[in-house]
Image 1 (spheres, rainbow, N blue to C red):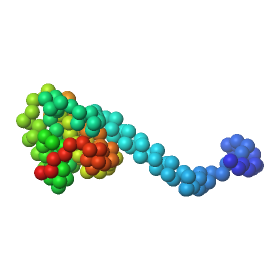
Image 2 (cartoon, helix red, strand yellow; image 1 turned 90 degrees about the horizontal axis):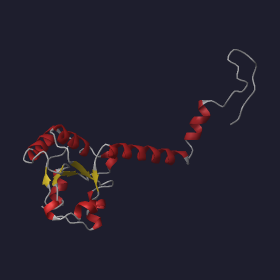
Image 3 (tube, one colour; image 1 turned 60 degrees about the vertical axis):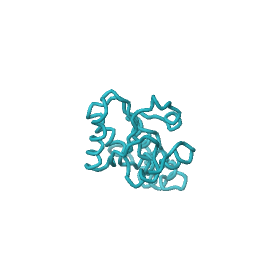
Length: 169
């Protein structure tokens, strides 16, 4: 860091630093931009997933049929109609009031002690508008055994492309 000496005066420290402008130029460097973006993305994904109980795709797919939790799809209907996990129920998109009402109607048919897995997969975790509101609604209804299916990239990449079972509607 370059320093300049200046006259002694009030608040004298002996050294004058480059200041904020230089720090801004350093942040604009081609190396710093991607590093900062990756750091922010990692923190956002970690913070989002940290308050959710997660289940991994292969773990869910390997469960015996008699131990499978209730599967609720909380994403767009068009994606559910295209392909979805066998046995899952369309429960409305979690990002709308109407979708939350559909979710509540589907969940009201289940005992509060039932294990539930919700999933969407419309987009990467850090942009998904459906999972968190759906999880909050189920918790507010008294469900304590709720997990989100970990689809960090999306349903196609993290489930379909892995060769896990799907059924068209």
